[in-house]
Image 1 (cartoon, helix red, strand yellow):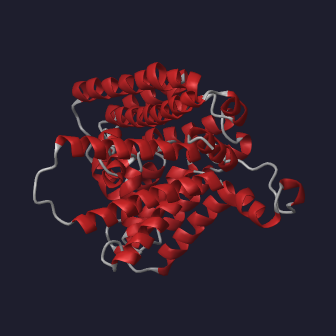
Image 2 (cartoon, one colour):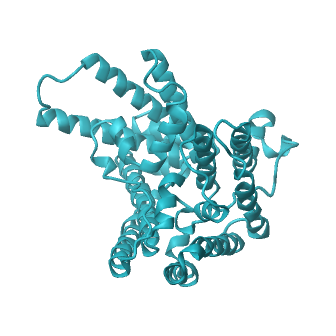
Length: 393
């Protein structure tokens, strides 16, 4: 995790936030660009991709140049979307997709032995696509060259989100808060909250989640298995929400606000509410750029369910290049489809929900969501073996 290193705070966050506050407004985007590019190159060289990873900074430069030609209804917006998807396929899915055709790496003539993921590619490609789509629709202004580049190189959100929208980021960049003391107090509090979640809670769960492998599962008593899986569900929540806390707190030091990403998702009583409160920026992105363009809820009921399954299939695939992630996405698609079908069959409530009914709905949601993590944290054969053992197979 980059956010828990001294380098992040000493070399980037603190000097960038102070410099941003001290320079004149016209120079503030360039502060974001300079520190963002340095952040990308430094952590690529030291942690992700090495020299080839650092060279991927040209993707940001090319995207910024090409995006200057985006206009409402322009075919170049569609070209921009296509090239962004191509970048993602090449770096993230090349070996997975060619492996589906040719099999194991030893039999795959197209296998890329030196494959790597550029730092933050899953997140910055979503922001590239969002901007191209919204420029095509006429939903956002172009801004200046430096403003757009500051948007895509804003390093607090580069690695793990939240996924920003340009039309929301631009006003914050142009008119950041001038309340230094309040912003730093709120920002540092959020930062420390995130670090506490990471070290005191998420890392604590590792003692249990390390056992989610075939050998340990085969030897474990059955009653231990749900504890391990529940520990993973807690770990991924505290881990990911910690990243978001640190990103949101970091942005606040600049006097800027980025979207919230988590709002007590495990307290929800159905799959739809879970997704509205789990990785909120991803949920809204999928809603606006996948589900609604497919027809959303305006279609006939069977097509709505298909739209849900396609959306969650893509969500699963985005999370990782593996069949297990696809199954995880389809699992959540099924949960959402079942909830929608149940809600439609039941119709509008005529009485207030009972306490017992609410508790039952929460328990079903909590259990089914956590069962799905088996597909997320293990490859498909291991996850299948885990569930067979869990349920007595």
